[in-house]
Length: 435
Image (cartoon, rainbow, N blue to C red; front, side, top):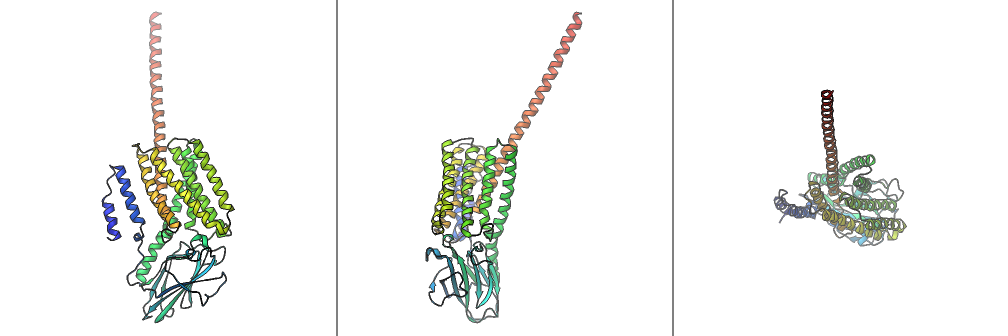
């Protein structure tokens, strides 16, 4: 059955909200369908097939690929699975036939990791600014070119892509599509929207939420949950920069940047745990002490690990803190499961969606799933917006209660004044009558 048909059936089965537990189960099924590989179409009508796709290793300063050592590969390719521990340059050579060079072709490239350059039949189409450390971060940048003669010629054409990468960061080349300009352009627009436009938009939303609730917490320090939510959003903003920036600045090396990104993720997860606890108006002193100890130990291990072992360390930390984040989502649901409050139900839904996205991204990060599209940067912002709305709703509700109390107090004071005035007047009348 086509993916779209599965999706339509799943949407049709979502209830109107009267059965919360059933709604969550169906929403989970829907998100699984959305995150499935079929959710992002790769093919295009009239796509030109590649005759060969080959790769070969070389040194950092190589200006041309070696003549020997080529091996057949498939795309997307993560060369760390074939050449473990290799840091350097890998050349990808893709060949395709073109019987007539008169018609233009579109070339769409999803990504290369981390930096690269590309040429067709010896004519360079583009290159990143830094092909050695500090490497340009193009791992989430799709590209598009329109090719025509004299770049293309009749017969066999050769596409040569030079990729500079580091073993811990899934180095390699993503899907490449050649075909009619309209179809390849549409594919590029889709990829650009997913990989560039949405992350930038959500980055702005995160910055606004973090700033607002940080100011609220500064003005009302008693609102502990607001402070932890502000810290969570600030840390998530730092982590989300990884999907947008194309340079490791202000750091001078990729490893330092990745350590900063992982530390941001760890702080975000820890802050989320404490937000869940404080929002439920609970305290777990021993558990919170263990959480802080885990954060300190993890940070120390992260910055003490050498480059050769950094990949396994990043994987271990990503696994641990992702599972902790998922555990906090379940804790949030568990602490308020029997509650019928609207704000608690909203948190249940956004937490359930985030659990599914984290599981998908964790499997992608660990290489269990192919590709490098991460959905937690999208669903997490729905979660943050949901939590922000819940906090705002609680804040407004508290303000209304305070306003109602003030109005009630004012009314009671006015009533007391009237009763006192009446009593004094009656006493005055009695005194006058007795004199």
